[in-house]
Image 1 (cartoon, rainbow, N blue to C red):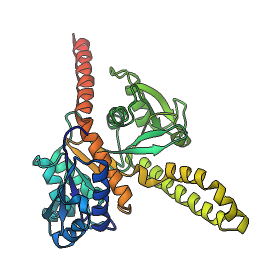
Image 2 (image 1 turned 180 degrees about the vertical axis):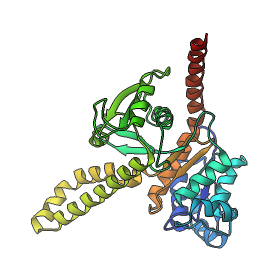
Image 3 (image 1 turned 120 degrees about the horizontal axis):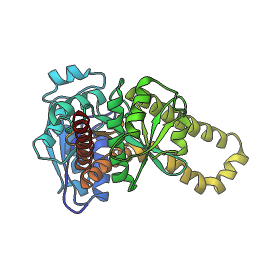
Image 4 (image 1 turned 45 degrees about the vertical axis):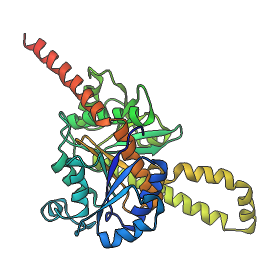
Length: 349
């Protein structure tokens, strides 16, 4: 990070706020010493927590916000009644130019609704999408949408592919990321009409995207493609299934280690390797999903994460701001829209 950035924080969002939020900010400050933070929420609760973290004394400003958006609040309810909430105020700080991005572990639907109302979408984007990384056999895969749009048309999926490709180039440093559409089979005739239409649009795209074709569920973990594109319903089911499987595997492993004295003794020798494996699959490492397609940087942290996970979510925001992701997405969309206009004009002549 070459220049100071100010990150707006919804300090009251999440299952364990504001305690883990403040600890996460303190951890992120170590990683990003030039960063500044605006914390929105109950000042009486936040101030003592900030005072207990010595490295936050010169980089945190607390803004009092009396209300909190609950986890079960409907987006429409949050929009009507949440103008004085920590979430609304944190997003508003970005809109007003006081911060470069916002991070919240609060209600996902409310966060998306408020962000879309205040920031609007980028030109050429119909719907924002939730985008994050998945660990794979060969590295990491970008996946979207993870829950913002339960129903999508072919154009939406193409937009997701473009945004995911930009995200992969910015965050993973890939020059030409491969893109796959999640389907029930890899054959061209499989899937819905929407998926087949989206696949044809990607093949015909003037951007010359590296479109792999259809992929199946097991291709995600294999790392068959760099960007996995799907609708929000399927993406969210895949995400929660993967998280549940990882937790189940960890529980099985712990039970197996405790099953006998011999197993516990063997753990002494296996611990370094197991520690590396656990670190590789730790959900906190991948915490922080970006709302791509908005005219601003909004990062959603898992509501049940700890300070380590929240710090990683802040890291996603800092990285996306530094890499100017939104400008790159806008440039790609301008290219594809210009090319489409040229084709349409030629057809009419």
